[in-house]
Amino acid sequence: MSQTIPGRGLPMEIVEGIIDNAPDGPTFLACSLVCREWLYRCRFYLFQRFSFAAGDANDVLPHLADVDYDKKTRRWRKRNARRGSGDTVKPGLLPAGRFIQSLVITETSPAHLMTSREQWETIRLLIAAMPNVREVQLVGVTEWALERYLDGVLGRWPVHVFSRPVGDEGILDGEESSSDTDDLTEQVQTPRVPLEGLTLRHVRTGDWSSVSQRIAACSDTLRSLRINSLRFSETKAKVEQAQDNLQVLENLPASLKRSTQIVKEDEAIKFGCLERLAIEGEIPGHVFGEQLLKEILETPSASLQKLTVVELAPGLLPKAKQLFTAAKSTIKTLIIHCDSFTGVPFNDTSRTYSFEMDLSPLIRLTELHVVGIRAHSGYGASAVGILYALIKGLSKFPYSTIRKLHILFTSTLSYSPYGEDQWRLFDEVLAMPHIAARLEDVELVGAMSFAGKMHRYMPKTRERRLLRLLA
Image 1 (spheres, rainbow, N blue to C red):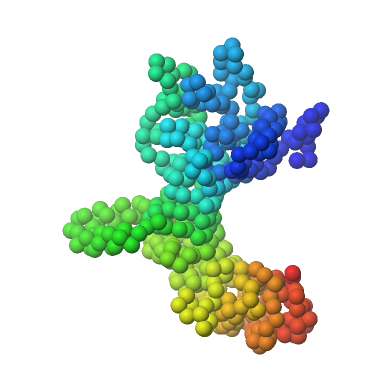
Image 2: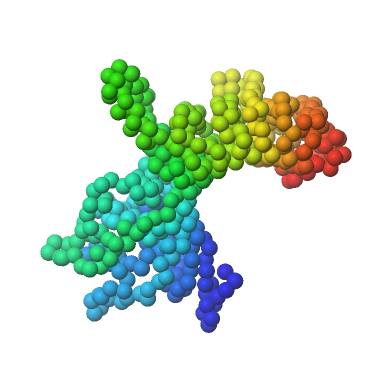
């Protein structure tokens, strides 16, 4: 935003635009009007990343495409089209939608949802105005947003959405379609670039299959896939019905089994370009990470030869050993997200437990990150279990490839006599020949409160000037 329009003091370029879902009121209304008028005056804004609520497509579309909503006919028209004598025409804007490469869709309240009569037309034009979107992030949305936005970017809308001309639903009785509608129809048919990044965070959907099918639709071009905290509304009766359907499938004739397998292969997840895979934040009762790993490993055509960064929850590490083996020659960075790890069993709070961290298949691992460790009450059961797993995993790691070790606590780590013994043992592990050979950096974030004690706990690491303590 360093360059401005001469004489107006307006920025010539905006890298990121956010239109959030705010409550109604005089203050917010005034800010909205000022922002809208400012955008109309500023002709040269180029959004690369755009974020808005799922139900605000009507407000967003005029900022990204050269269209206006006609309240008389209840449809969208080209902004420079002929109007009546009493209508005012806004100046044409640079179609900023074509510069957007990253699209973020957040949750919306039911009051902001459009009616079914208008939503398909508006969202179709909105998706068409952004033909160069390479990354989509869905945060806190429901099945409604998956069907409208993600399916639109992937070209998976129902057939009836493409079969009717744009705007026909909104035409009043006795009115004929104008040439503006034909122009908008051509805009909807604009070719799109392949989707390279997909993030699903706190998404609420019916079951795993609805998510799996959408991942499979773009899996051959994805370079980054991140899934965090999916919630399923599937009931126990639906699960039992699905199990019955699988039992019926086992008893089908051989010919029908072959046809079913063909359909399954077409809908399988086929990663050919994937470089980053993140599965984190599993919620008890909503298991999805294990199912995704299973589908990836069971697909013969799935290729993981470009996978370099893997992010997993602690509970998935034992089940990810086959994934590590399949991509052992390419994975260089492993990030373990411990946000949902409490260190205490759900049914027995009197004891702590850890998890297995088998890193032996990763022959090219150079960076290990353990983040999101909770230490709210004293040393914390989660910190005890995670540090124990880290000590055990590194002591059995057979290769001299690790260069950086990063440990992040979500809160300031407190002193504990039990923690003193663990940190001393951790220092001994880092001094082992196969670990110390190429280790260049040991970073502890959240342990600055007792830095003096940490230097005494880890003397060997401190003497090699590898230890860094950050607040």
